[in-house]
Length: 116
Image 1 (cartoon, rainbow, N blue to C red):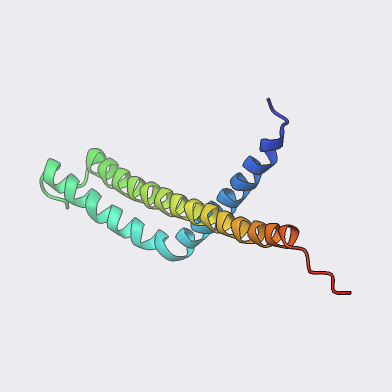
Image 2: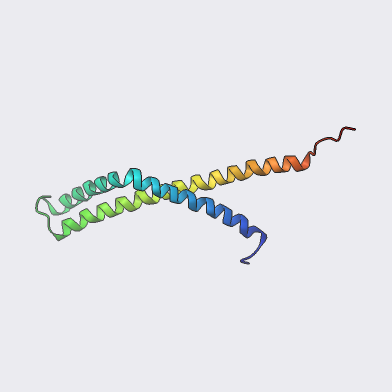
């Protein structure tokens, strides 16, 4: 069932999550890209020096481990920021919807008294 009454509600939740994830990735690119590259490079150098010995004698294998460390750190931290942003966006959307829904229900349930 692609079209139904619950479909618009799901799309609203999805929209809030997508907006939150995009804001989270924007925060990642502005705040955490450079540190994740640096720490991933340091981890890659440590792994490569542990496996191949001296870090100064860098061959193809050592360079591959360094690049793999950088890429894995960037991907992991970007995914973390995206998930945190999506959760924050969904929770803000749910809280906003609950607050607005409560105001609308209160107004419909208790009409103003008619004073003659």
